[in-house]
Length: 170
Image (cartoon, rainbow, N blue to C red; front, side, top):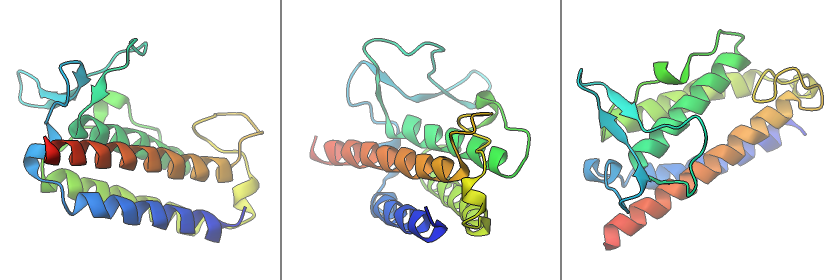
């Protein structure tokens, strides 16, 4: 799979994300669509801490936009760390910046960092083993990793869009 096709897919997904990012209001982020949800909460020391369980609960809680944006920041930061050969940060080291423009800016900076990785890949490199999210599995290549980023981002963008639209009409 050539890098140009993966880049096209990423750019298309990002353009859909920008549609929602440009329209997000600070009150959208922490809006809880249901009592059974995951969000990001202030700890006693003032830091934002995402709801989390080591084993996925059943039923799965509905995430808030805050939680989904933190989740994007977490998986994307770790993926970029792996792709750049850096020690991946722990989930607890990925801190959500807060509701509003700070989070939008953070997500855009993650995009910029990812584009540096993506634009630096050659078609030949795409066939090498991916460092993440399937470590040491030669069946999964860097092309698979990039396609996974595109798919995960697309899913998260759809979740944010749906949550934003539900809040607007509620």
